[in-house]
Length: 379
Image 1 (cartoon, rainbow, N blue to C red):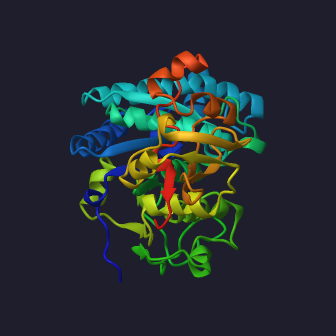
Image 2 (cartoon, rainbow, N blue to C red):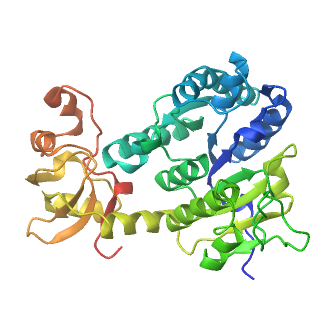
């Protein structure tokens, strides 16, 4: 059996927290003691210079409690209005819990397009990167006030996996109602049989693993473990390990570190190689940049591509599109995600990054292509 990882093995971690863990639905209130214990766990990891990103549910549940709405299903507009109220309470609670440990929380609301459409993907990634650089803990949720069924992730397990992929996280932690994946699916009532055994390590997600999650079971199973397996596919394909663990007790992250029962899903890749593979092989180039010899040398030395090194723009690409980077002789040097539209790129080519504001009228990125968004030939 492969070696079981530890939280200490990872530098950038995404932690997903579900509504049922955060909100006491019967009392209609936040579980403050539990949130305080989780914040203490996050602070411990944060103090070890790790990047922590939280994906938190709970806005609709908290809004329902604040507004004293009756039990039962909410219409779309009611759920969205409840989320608008609950989001403020949720953000305040995270801010207060983390500030007790000297950590600044930050709030980001995403819709499906923010991780699927490349222009917005670059914006979201850059914003979260800057927050992590400033040692903030971003708290991310789906923007329930505007998301409809057509533009939703559908659940925060998959949202968390998309965030892990977008941010090149090394680990995704799904804090759950159960302590992991069992080798037999739940029954029609969602209950596990007595002979069901926890699967501690999943080396690869196979059809057999999906069957354990209840693929052919009830609709309840589809809303539970199956969505976590689907999140695991997204995360592991992006080079991130994933762990499913119970979040019911206090200090749930510390419990994982202490060896509590959980299920680890392993990836054979790492976030950098997975991302570069995606850029190099999965995206159709929309244009090309021709760069000078100095820029070629800088890129091969691990630098980003600055406007000063670009001599020619080819094609009608948009910001966030993939482009080919060619040397002075036309040879392909690499491929990357461009930070400017073709028209703007043409205006600033050959110029210093300090001139961008003067030329374009807005302060764009200093790099034409950031090194994290660039794949050189041979990588």
